[in-house]
Length: 73
Image 1 (cartoon, rainbow, N blue to C red):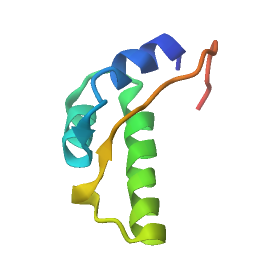
Image 2: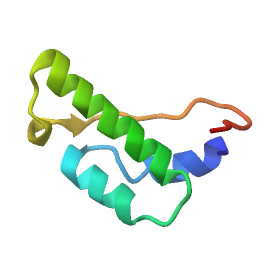
Image 3: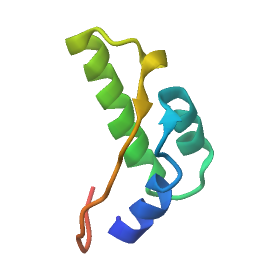
């Protein structure tokens, strides 16, 4: 996936709750949504398991994509 395509998706995410973010990613039609969805879901699962945070209390304050040409999945 190209970095600029991933940036178009993540520009919709900052300052939103975890649940709202998953819903946005679920219904957006960009190809970059699914890997970002999996990443955010995994981060929340780790926060829940390792630190005891509840997913409903999580929010996304900052998210960014580094410069790059192509990430192959």
